[in-house]
Amino acid sequence: MSASDEVGRPDAVVVGAGVIGLTTAVALAEAGLRVRVDADRPPPATTSAAAGATWGPFMIGPEDRVGAWAATSLAVFEELAAGPRETGVAVIEGTHQSLTPARPPRWAVSAGARPCAAAELRAGYTVGWRLRAPVVDMPRYLAWLERRLTRAGGRLRAHTYRSLAEAAHEAPVVVNCSGSGAATLVPDPGVTPVRGQVVVVRHGGALREFFVDETPDAPELVYAFPHGDTAVLGGTAQRGDATLEPSPALSEAILRRCQAVLPELRDAEAVGTRVGLRPAREEVRLETAEAAATGPNAGVLIHNYGHGGAGVTVSWGCAAEVLDLVKQGRSAPPAG
Ligand SMILES: Cc1cc2nc3c(=O)[nH]c(=O)nc-3n(C[C@H](O)[C@H](O)[C@H](O)COP(=O)(O)OP(=O)(O)OC[C@H]3O[C@@H](n4cnc5c(N)ncnc54)[C@H](O)[C@@H]3O)c2cc1C
Image (cartoon, rainbow, N blue to C red; front, top):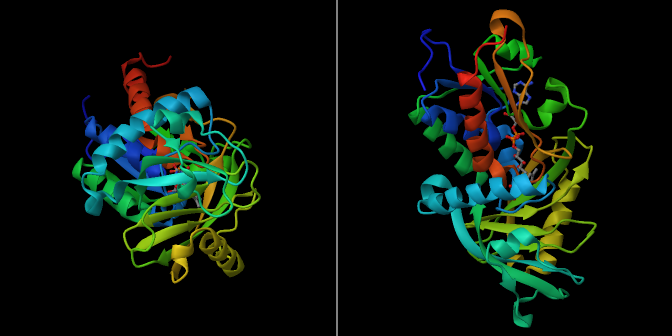
């Protein structure tokens, strides 16, 4: 693909600097496009920075496309785990457990999950499955993605868009990766913020595996992801709540719930709280849309948003699909 002739004008603008926007921008930049990421919140202030995070579909659809995106991403994360200090990605063991009878989801079985022996179950849990899966230290990972983008010639700019038509003036290709911001930017009433709060603790190496409570219809989320000497403990899923201010009462409750299930965290010290808004939608919207502008600015508009509770899990698969759509869009004859 050839870069735009116009000096300084990007070939593609990606709106959004979360995991979806940055991964998409890396894929486009490494394919030879001049890419600029425009976002009103920088990577460390996005929802993506608040994620736990592990690989595994949650609150996302449709199942068939998600399965393929997740598989592509898993292969990439397994490679990135070779350099965990740099990338923030590690592949470790852990369990998903349920207080009531439950079966492992299909994605866990295909990732090699095996049933837990009775001795592996936490107090009160009746069933569980063990697997090796990527865990991602998100602030470190987003910083690494940003460096990878810069190395490929991409840039980041602080900018708030009021419409996608405005973005169409900036580049012939616009990719909308605005997460929960899509609710107003597109606008798309199908996007609902699902607030998540997590507590970061220092645990001195006491937590060696990840843990996820998978009890069907559980009223509260309980999970823990170790990242070296710290861990991310969760969580909450507050549908329709877009409050970014952390709640000390919720942090206290999260810590207590996790310590009750994982006694090795009894001396863990809370060192931070993060809040993010999962961009929930019935289905991820990943498609070429009608151009947001007409006339000379009518370029290619591709949406890539609505990844709910699994944006990290599907990020590389979605980025690869966007790249395919960009290639198709650029080779199509201009409209009119
Ligand atoms: C507590 C918590 C735990 C989670 N755990 C996991 C997990 O374990 N595994 C997993 O896969 N996923 C997890 N998720 C979900 C995951 O974090 C999201 O699916 C993902 O972050 C969505 O990424 P995104 O890039 O679409 O959105 P965001 O990270 O929200 O980024 C959106 C970007 O768009 C920009 N933007 C929006 N509107 C505009 C505008 N008008 N103009 C300019 N810029 C704009 C924002 O500034 C931001 O840069 C978790 C989420 C939370 C909250």
